[in-house]
Amino acid sequence: MEHDVSEKNLKEIISELLRLGYEGTYWDFKEDYTDCREDKLIDIICMANNIDGHQAYLIYGADDNGNVKGIEKTKYSRYTTKSVTEFLRSKPFAGDYIPKATVQTLEIENHELDIVIIKNTNNTPYYLTEAYSPSHDVKKKLYAGAIYTRVNDINTPRIQTANIEHTEFLWRKRFGIDLSPSQKLLHLLEHTEDWSETTWDSDRHSYNLKSPEYQIIVLDSDEGYETLSYFYDDEKMLYAPLQLKYLTTTLYETELWYMDMGRCLIPKPEIRYKIENGLFYYYIEKDSLSGKLLPFFAYGKYQCNNRSGQQIPVLIFDNSQERFEFEDWFSQNENLRDNIEKEILQNAIFQHIRAKEEKIGKSQCGVLELAIAFAYYKNWQKTNNHLSRE
Image (cartoon, rainbow, N blue to C red):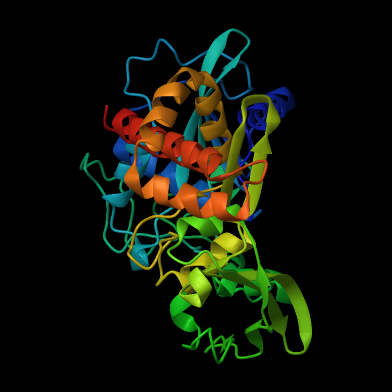
């Protein structure tokens, strides 16, 4: 699976596709939007089922030859991530497997282009369990059970279904049949319910119920220290090597952190420190190895809490792109820092946390810097939620 790309990298990708001057298996040019819901849906389904197994792009604001026309003057409603997600969620997809799509607007050649990015996932084939024909036009109708895909620059005709070769490819992709062991392990981690239950403080071992040759093993632990540990009731913590194995081969290795003297477990988060603006935080991206492991230790959720259920300042992002967006927002709102810091310093719980830190000795980046980053993160989330409702 491809990782999400930054706006800069996306612009490079789209510019290169435009330069090619033709459409392909995983990209399609759209000079304008349409109000035909069947057309909108089949375009996304075909892209999600593309036989290159590639992240796909619907590029609004360019003609069939890749000439930039711009989408800023369209008379139709433009896609946003929220609107395209709601559009897809309301459709009768088999197994509730819904294509994942986001929207970014780029400026190229002094025009705006809306880019619908359809994620490359293992949930193919995407297909409907009921016919879809809101316009009641039989020529536009999408049929239940039909598997629509895209070959070169041609979508599967609506009254047909993909040929047997392409259909088999999409099903093999879902079941991970053609994946290498390391790729398949990452695929298996996406379904925590398919792993054996265990107590990580004693058994320290879990295996996949459908493919037991894949295992998660936690080794002996040692005492450790992290600034993050002060936010737990007991600042004592342990590190333990965590191995992901295929038979006897270790495919991946990271650490499991036993926080609050073993009461709370999290896979090792990453640490980010931007010296130029004093931004310091721990984070986990959901599409990373630690992100895939987090639900195993957080009761199926993407969160890090203390024993009282309070959220701990480990910032959770969908991917690196979302994290970069947070950092940009932080830089644009540094004027909030004084008020945020003042409010934190007056908080009784934080005063207790800081007192624990002062007993041992403050590191260069301490609990105050973590708390400030976390406060910015919560404000950023509220701002994003507000914007998505507009």
